[in-house]
Image (cartoon, rainbow, N blue to C red):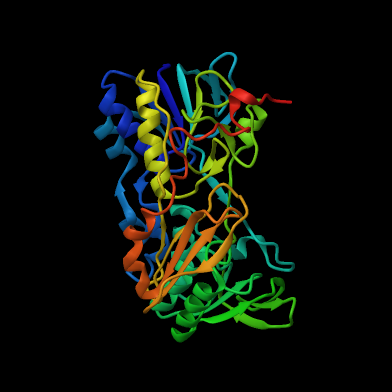
Length: 397
């Protein structure tokens, strides 16, 4: 069986299959997944505990229902062991399969912060539905929760767990939450709101080591702070899954390098979602993923389509203190500049030429989001210069 093969059944894989099926009713589509392959909303994981949602309640459609709805084949609990791009085939659990077109929608792995003395299975994460199942199972008898990392996911889950009645400690090496996304003023506003909820914040020093105390853990920072936790959750960001692509000889950098049509350095192989580095950009957010899936579906259907990204602000699901941010996604230098008056917090990102590259809004100012985003240039415009990391301009070593 050849046709289009998609490795991964997260939001990227399922969305691509849906969009491609609309355009090509006749094509054979096979999805390969290392888990159950059920369809669920990954962003919902970080605010599901306070809503009392058990893991099975987050599943919107089972893999079997998705396969029937989209008329696709889904290989569940399957491991892709290797990829032969020259022969247009992939090895799954020891068996080779041919493809006409292949899409790698591999996602990203949660970064696990190193903590000496903490048993590996004691450090939970929240990167997929199986992770949520593990967390849900541990929360029943847990009162004290430590969250390591105050980025988007860390702040969202800390706020959510607190609303669910747990005692939460939030740790981060930075001096304020969301330090990579917002200026200090907005970060401090979020910290004050989280503390008002009863969340204990330990910022400016990492958790360095742990000691077991029965079924719980004492955690110690480099500054000497300590706390005891029944559950420890790591939320230190994600890292694109690139190993399969690298072993197959595809061009990789921080992610799997693709051009504006999501094509990798190998013919008939594409990458999509959190694993893809698109024209130099890593965009592990929902809206870029959705736009990418629609563009790639058109390309796979015979209508080569460049992906275009307007400014797509990111909303932090922290009800205690709402935050909206349009980050500088290309990694270029910028400075924060306070802007606006009135209730809430507002700041521009400006580059060395005083050009607006992004913004951040906090508190009551988030209602101004749509007016602000019109002032920011597209993240990847149709006429933007091609990145030096694009596959057409680079080769594998």
